[in-house]
Length: 199
Image (cartoon, rainbow, N blue to C red; front, side, top):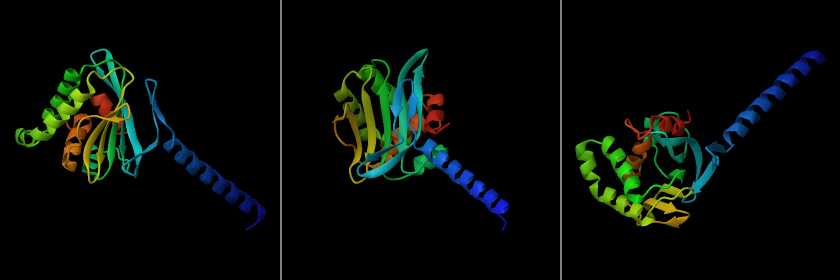
């Protein structure tokens, strides 16, 4: 190989490394939604998770909250995300004050809309526990950070401001059911679903 060919190959390799580094860096960057920053990675129960996507929940003309979805492996397909097992997290930062009854009602409706009557009936004890956890939070105030997390070997836990709220709800399938509120066939907000899927 002559010097010119070596120089061209070297330049191409350097360009390839630079492009790969750039892609990796962009994948590692935080995402900002309406002033709320979602870090590219986090940990739940000692498991490393990546930010799949983030978006904005709106109702009428009002911005309600910004949400980010953390999973073991990124995917743009809702069914693939719902099929994933292990630790997962939905991080919500409130953009306005919402009372506990309204917040619980919205999640209840999201669960009902994304399950058959039989599935919904089977989830009744866990749904009641979730409602109790939401009432333990009280009013979700603007700026509050609420986390819904699945911890393997434990269950679905909820924290607000870094503090546990209510009880841990057993069963991995229940967390998947909760996830359908945002990325199921009838999500509470279609644009938020698109954001959570990385779109």
